[in-house]
Length: 179
Image (cartoon, rainbow, N blue to C red; front, top):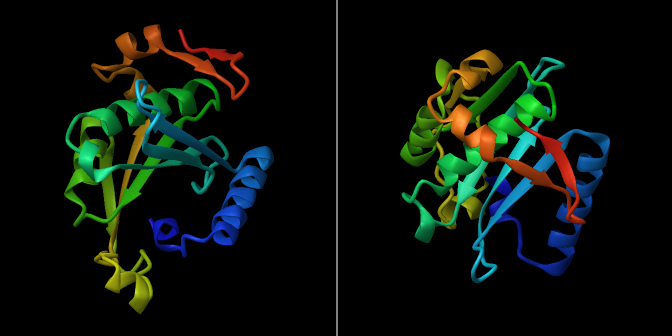
């Protein structure tokens, strides 16, 4: 997550958020956030990105705060994002690319139902010296995984999750019925 290593200044974050909003309105990038219902604390985030080289495919990315890892939150959120990609954006494929040395990302992808397609050596950026000094760790290899819409619908979690899903926009209006 290169964005996590940007300088945490007001200007840097403002510029990043301006780009996020522009990408959203162009239909290129959709950022979703996980908040604790009781405290309102930010727990993690996901993105559906139009990085895939297919008009009806998206790439998912996800992260969770380290103190909330291992609780299934990221897996459940990723399942919901896959449902959003299939229902709202009519995706026939959702792909997930991660560093194979990131065991937590691998576990989430596996639990959601993504299947490994290939490893791409030298694909991921290795970061700057400053990023590595702050803890940035990547192998440089990307693991490409994917989940077709048909395979997503066949996952054991699909029917129950989709039956209960409701999507709301930022103004509290229903967005799409997933059932």
